[in-house]
Amino acid sequence: MTVPRTITIDGPAASGKSTIGALLAERLGYLYFDTGVMYRAATWAALDHGIDIADEAAVSRLAEELVIRVTPPTVNDGRQYTVYADDVDITWEIRSPEVTRNVSPVSAYGGVRTALTEQQRRIAGQGAVVMVGRDIGTVVLPEADLKIYLDATVETRAMRRHLENVARGNASDYDQVLEDMRRRDQIDSTRAIAPLRPADDAIIIDTTGLGIEEVLAKIGTLVQR
Ligand code: DC
Image (cartoon, rainbow, N blue to C red):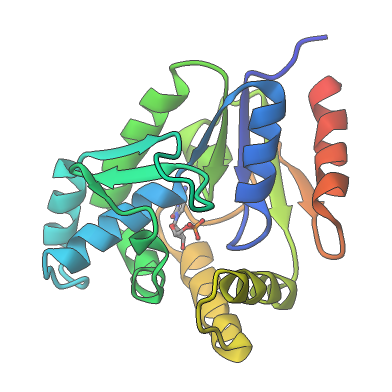
């Protein structure tokens, strides 16, 4: 039996990728890396620098120059990791509604994707990894040993995100979350470069109505196979 060393988890927003990915990596003793963080960091930096999000050349240049670092948590405030952009801690800033609203257009830019994909491959090359995103099994690591695609209905995903917001003490309106999620799904899955879709050899798991442990058990069987 060979245990897969490179595991990819792709899927739409709030399909369970980060929760499942982090737990799976912890249990296997692998590095966990959430690539969405990089697209969010580039978006945060563009907004912070006052760059027009519609200016593809300027946003791409910024993404090429930006130094994004993800480290184990440096503060005990519920974070899974600490994210730095040019040494500024932006762990929570990248989850703001403003970043979330602007991240899909930013991640549709070819220059942004090339810059970040290169860094992701370098990170995955360092050892055993669970890498999470939208295009990891299709574009970033097409040779991965095990590819998983998590999905759930948009209503289920919007409700998960809404409850997460509320639990964090943030104002949240379910209908607004649902509308934003539909819009993000639409942009992410129809963009020209590296759209959200399962790789041909990905195992698709529908997490609607499943608990975290049930999903992990399914993946555990695949890892052992
Ligand atoms: O997983 P997330 O919601 O944090 O991702 C934020 C955005 O980043 C998402 O709308 C699409 C983009 N993304 C991407 O295009 N490719 C990835 N590998 C990861 C995220």
